[in-house]
Length: 204
Image (cartoon, rainbow, N blue to C red; front, side, top):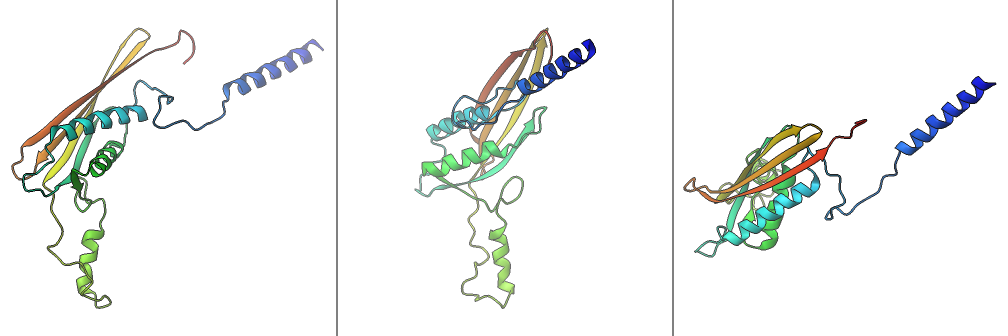
């Protein structure tokens, strides 16, 4: 009888423990500060901070303005990931690209990029000149695409340190605009994000 009581109590405790470990999922404000802060990863708020500081600095610098009144054409080159994590740097470049377009100070091209064209259609439609199925008067001609004047590039670097139960990560976001005529860097900005956490005495 005692063994049965102990077994029932153990089952009850296990069930309660498992129920206590579970939590219901919920949506949070992606522009707020409710997200999980993980020390060794770039979280969505980190992307927002880096993009916001970068674009504010870029637009304030005036490097996108041209003397002839024509809008600068910007291409997105590569943002190197030098962290220990597998991250998609497009989260940063898309935020930068969209902010530039909204500002009205420059245009961006999707016909060419550091990792190849974002949109292959610009090249594909020009192959229709060889296809008699299409009205050639409506086909986009070779030599009409506009080449970029400048490129956006960068690198994300991570350094980690620990002392006892304390863990720390330092993320360094480097961003640059290069004049493609001269090869000179026209603008550079660094955004630094440091995060710490303390491991519990017991458990994970």
